[in-house]
Length: 123
Image 1 (tube, rainbow, N blue to C red):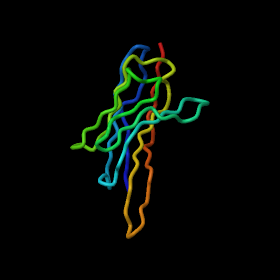
Image 2 (tube, helix red, strand yellow; image 1 turned 180 degrees about the vertical axis):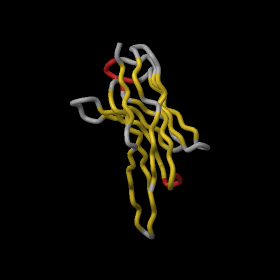
Image 3 (cartoon, rainbow, N blue to C red; image 1 turned 30 degrees about the horizontal axis):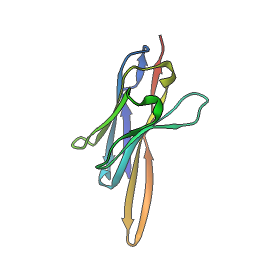
Image 4 (spheres, rainbow, N blue to C red; image 1 turned 90 degrees about the vertical axis):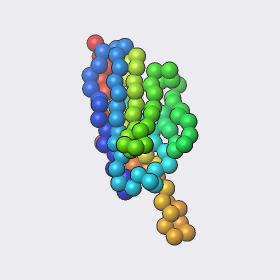
């Protein structure tokens, strides 16, 4: 089991910056990738960006050049630095982790989600 706890959301004016954090605990050694999703009111949840273990980050087009995903492996923490915020970035942001477990000859893929943190961009 992996537990994810997000923090850092809040209210920000357009053009401002926020940094979200996601602390992972539990069986973190099983994690193969982490990422951030967001869900705005009345919209489907969308992928903001992700980072595989030892790989490169990727982002959805609407946040490229403004958002940066990074991780501190020593602290088992994932970050989402959000700059030049826009009202359309308003959403609940979720941290997610993909884990792989080998049980005997069986490989099990698991996806974990945090509880979400609200980001509101408004003047």
